[in-house]
Amino acid sequence: MIGSLFVSSRVSRLRALSSALLVTLLGLSAASAHEVIPTIADMRVDGDRIVFDLRANLESFVAGVDLSETNDTDLSAEAASYDSLRALDPDALAAQFGAFWPQMAAAIMLHADDVALVPELDSVTVPPIGNPELLRTSGLTFSAALPAGTTAVDFGWTAALGAIVLRQMDVPEPYDGYLDNGATSGPIALAGGDRATGWETFVNYIPVGFDHILPKGLDHILFVLGLFFLAAQAGPLVLQISLFTLAHTITLALAALGYVSIPGEIVEPLIAASIVFVAVENIFTRQVSRWRPYVIFGFGLLHGLGFASVLGEFGLPQETFVAALIGFNVGVEAGQLAVIAFMFLCVWQAIRIDRGANEVAQGFALYAVLFAAAVALIALNPPMLVALLENPVWVFAAPLAAIFALSGLSIAMRDQIDAYRRIVTIPASAAIAAVGAFWVVERVFL
Image (cartoon, rainbow, N blue to C red; front, side, top):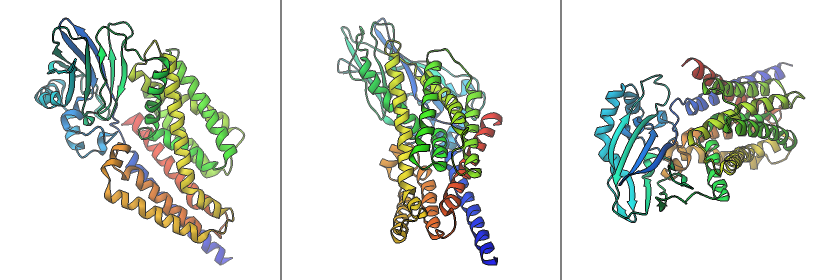
């Protein structure tokens, strides 16, 4: 009796410590108020000049944030500089950007029929300071003289300036493209006619949707992981993911078509609250309840509105709207499935042993290697991986290291009833719930 109480107490302490560890690591990873968004650029011809009207976050440009390596300015080495610029009034920031313009102009690649053009800054429009915890989107216009007889232009900029949505204006069948990682548009006919086909648009928007989940969609990642940690079995998990997919597809389409419009100030806190609900339920229930699928469907409707806000920023091409919408949604689903598949691979050995597999030595060795690899990646912070994740490696590797450690601990405690659930599922769910609760507070009050 005393022995069992001692073991139960030890498990409870371990669970509390592991929950605190995961909360700390996920909290460090998730406290994001300055999420990076693509620049929107509208290109048009005005007389003998090619003109670009941009909506962009100027603070990140001036601060020197490498937007190819982060999706949140708070996580960059230039965060302090960014914050000081974000606090400037419109005139002061416009002046700072004017001084910075020669550096930006040098990073822009603009050619007319293979002739390099020199972009000139025409105007800068900066909105009021507003809430300094949110990104400020400013407007700027630059242009360049076109040589006589120019028929096509090629545009792009260096990867450090981030992704750009380039849209050709005032011509039939206009070009519309998403340029990332320093890609250029290729020749764009000034007379029009470069509109992508439906198939090309579908294919082009798949990576946009995927990127919104991995690596940018941490709130959606945590929600999907909340589904996974309760039901790591195929049947219940497929049911939940299918309902979630159906629901967010419905609202994504309705919102993108303009039939539904709910302010982000309402949608984003509710998305965070959905994360809390799913994670907390994981702690107090052992299996998918008969009413949970209906709740998941409702939360899917909310997340669809969140996805729609991203498409609203891009401005879907009207002529190939359906293809873009479907491509984006396919990318989102691929991202969600990738999250589930990856986490399944991470914990599958611990689950097998918890279910009675005689693979203890193999499990200890596997999680020791995985834990060491995660720690090594954090220490090395490889530039290629930073660019791929668009964040410092620790943002993803630190929580994974904790999962590997907890999985190994659950193997060590395998003689206890529900060791995996008590040592991995409950602490992970508690950490996810804590981050979701922080986001609720942040999105409502901060």
